Image (cartoon, rainbow, N blue to C red):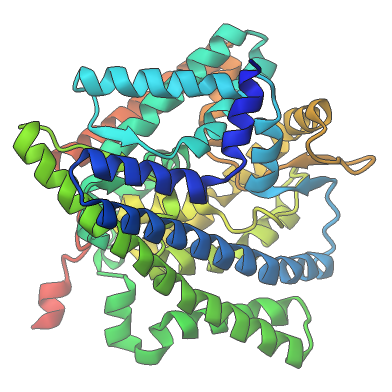
Length: 455
């Protein structure tokens, strides 16, 4: 039996089918009524499909504006940005990709049994991110064994990230029993030193979230209004006509308003599921609070998340134009989920911190995409999953955890500085993990001045 073909056939139905099926099965195991389990699964699938449609529409709307902006800044860069969809396509076409399911499942089961994690990762579709790390590390180090070790390290990190974020997701969004255990949130680790410095700057300790802004600036803080303003500014910067600029403004505003509506389906799916799972654990597994790992769109009701990612679009274009040595123009990956998700979870939704951190760390992703362009291009050509334009290369402008993958790849070569860098990076992760587990950051942590303002 060709197991690779079997896995490819299963994955072909997409995350919007696989994850709801897993949720239905888990719901039945945890004692949900069949009707409620099926409803939770279908609502979850609806949320993912709706969120994916909105994200795709947003990308389709802003990418031409980003391209126009780049044109008027004189950018001419050789690497084609194919986004996460292109990266996933070529990774799943790699013959060894499906073997990383074994790495994911075995490590997750062992860590659960040993009580090293409470996160059960249900998002098997995103195993492609682990396989991509394996391929990158293999190409950089020449060692397939080290590639699997690196994939294993990523699995451990992802599960511990899931443990970290679960209390905050419950506090911030009201979702019980779920978390986001994916490597894109690793951006929070490298952001953490600067975020710590911000603790000593009073302006960053105010409550900068959509709700508090609404009290201060009213209608301007509404997602539809902010989206329209951002879309209009981006369009005018790209020299759009007034009509086209207004069209983009309305489109962007509408999509920003749609995101919270789509996120409501996650609430309808996950609230009864999380409650049932919590009751099951209290009754049958005393002392354990398991959480289910799902993909980042479950965070979609956060206005701060979308505002940050859309505002940073012109910032990414500007950096692409001025950074020496950069070879990629952000287009398909111009909406940087890593900065949005990592910043949201690290700061508890502090919009000002998220924006400042996004500006500071955006260059890391462009340089990461530039460095890995040759590896992406090689994989694309080897698999034939996508066509590489003649004389060009392909890459991903918002690649997840570029620093982790870079250091693991070079460490496999025996590069001393890379090994030291990897140890420091993992130590920083352990420090942040302990900080969160000791005192999870609630959504209102950065509110030292709120009581004074209220008075």
